Length: 353
Image 1 (cartoon, rainbow, N blue to C red):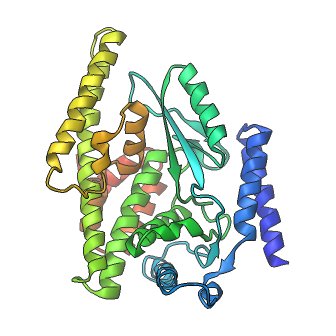
Image 2: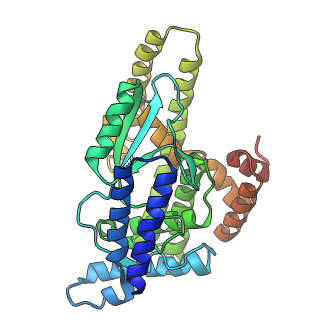
Image 3: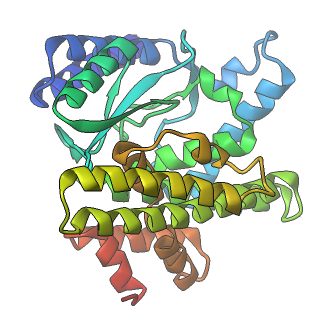
């Protein structure tokens, strides 16, 4: 009965949150139905890995998830609760479809309002058709748009989120980053601060993964070295995106006609893709190698900004905390408690201009 009650409460909560967010009844029902399926199908990982049909590779990945939970709880002091102690089967390749939008001559995300979390710079759908309808609506209103898939999401500690089956396509390092990222959302999430919430969770996901694999397998292990490389590549690309944003911001603020801005921004897009291809020419397996082949617009760039903003600021805080990630997390909580712009609050902690 415990599973049934959790499932029923999940549907009720999702429905209430969607209703108070001004979402359509269809959106409410679909979200509640999909969340209900996820909660209903949960199995404790400790029991699931004992089943004879679970292969050795999957067992190892799931044991890594359990170890990540323990590290997040005991070392990082994150709000773990029962999250990622269970496994849930997902019956389709893509879990959710994420819509992002932005004005054509502004690097400012279109936002949607939701109960508790406030304004967010994206909206998730469980149906690709529903997401495409929102894309079509936004395009008709003159916005740049971007549609992408997402492999995971957090209920911010409201429920015990399970590990979803399609995440098992990732290796151990990728799994660890996802779980640390989502558990940080359970621990610190600021209403209306989408870029801070996602970029800082991304930072924690990578930094925690580096520390975790060093502690578990040693500094010379393949897992630790891969975690270090992925974090380095993420930081490198974040710096590059900031350069592109500066060029576009200068263009959009210039006193020229809108048509000229639209024409010149295409030159910036083309030049940026060529420059990125040049920078990683000797690293074809770079995590962000696809950027040079991607069709760009402001919505695509805003997605990157939301997830990659000010990594060096967070890294400076980590250094100031003596490379103690648990202490860094406490400092982030202190900065968030001050209110106002959380990036500025972190800047003040590390005394940066």
